[in-house]
Amino acid sequence: MTPAELGAALACAAGRPLAPGDLVLSVRGAGRYATAVALKAGLDAEQIARRLREIDGVLDVQGDGMLVITVDPARVVTGAIGEGAAFGRADVPRMGWDDRPRTWQNPGFVVRYAYARAVWTERWAAEAGVRAGEPRVEAEAEQCFAEHLADLPGRAAQAEREQDPRPFAFCLERLAAAYHDVHERCPALPMGDSKPGAAHASRVTLARAARVALGNGLTMLGETPRERI
Image (tube, rainbow, N blue to C red; front, side, top):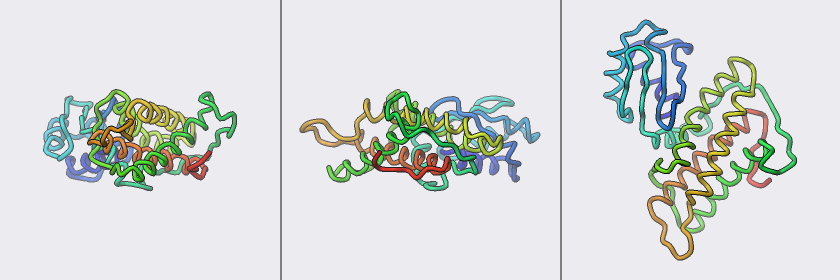
């Protein structure tokens, strides 16, 4: 469940439209959001929590003022893919990273290479007959990726609101680093003569989400995402 989807769910639970400033969500971990919407909009927090618990994809809601909402982190992944080019989109001020050096010390290289890796992973998986499947966000690297994926829309909105691209750029760098960890520690392709399984299919889906999010991020900052660097 992406921030956009959760925002719609909160408006539904409130029973009325909510001002954008009331719908600010902070990410507290993989599949965990916090919001002060009840306090800001003068709503009954317990009633909002009760209604949210009835929504598919919401696992738990805690708090009597500031609400902490737990959702299935896999839904963050599928939601980002489903939103596609709209995921996290905002009017972010343009900013460029240096093209060189192409080393891990250059954040621009880290982001661009993560996007390219995600594209290659999908392509290689298709050639190997490994289809994308239901995402499983289980390993620590996968949870870190889901956390930073969920944080991207909020940072984009912050960058637009403050007319400062740096919070968004930092988020994109963290997301890219998290995807590199997934790519290296949780491979989408089976090793050797091993047969592909559900875990591999899941990781192809994570690669797809990375491609969508990182591609959108680079585009918002004024770059054309490249498959080769």
